[in-house]
Image (tube, rainbow, N blue to C red; front, side):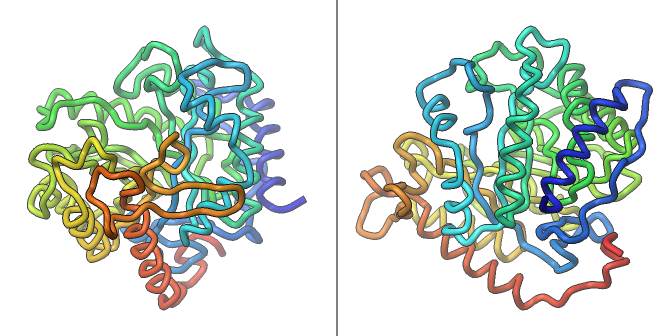
Length: 375
């Protein structure tokens, strides 16, 4: 049994036996897997390390395990669920990535939700094991939005999100190749006020405290407000382990297409914190806001600041990122195509950016294992 699978099985035993809930804590039944690849830590809470090497993450996001078996949703989500399998891992590798982000459904993980599904956790476990056995780092992103086909019960992390992480968090605590994105795209206005930021802070802080109290030492990611678009004005969050990163989704929108816009929204914030684009893509509907030039500008902006990217849209019907024909993949491209034309998209530019990040990662020297927590 490989280390990632062993960590998953032992993690399930921890979750089942400890009954982790509010006010309780559980000790780790297994130390983080030392022989697995793709183990992630943050150095001083600021710098990404993968297997003790400075790292710019790059990968793809999928929603093929957002809903459990037997649950109905929209045709696109159902198709992604039915097709989910080894091709998802191969697509990440073809894109020169090392991260797979899996959206997981909050209604099906919360034990008090009417839609709770006890078997769903095992489905997530098998998906994680497949990706980890393929050498990828995994991000599990808790999602509440419409693809779940459940009316949202919260738009900022509250009780349901908390209970979901109490159930899910200990399961993969033995594998630091699994990262937890605590709440996908918290809702808020473009310029959140102090009250909304405090709601954001308190909702996430309780989950962070729960996970750390339960012995979960995995890297955690907190998304910004306004659908993960901004951290401007964000209050501080506390993590005793300094393993807290931040997720941004810089989809183009009005007043959000230039370096100065990005500086205000997340660039300045990223100077002193570990920030990752956990989701980004560019669809035809966004062409009026920018095309190839703006895409190139954003990717250059991110590369210059060593902010990694996890791209969205690989398993969408009519994907604007890439197409799949059997075992073959083809990236979308703006070459010879206007932004909204068939086959146009940022896939080719993203792949080239990933190749440059890969070369940068390979040029980095490893740090001492003790300093990255893998002694």
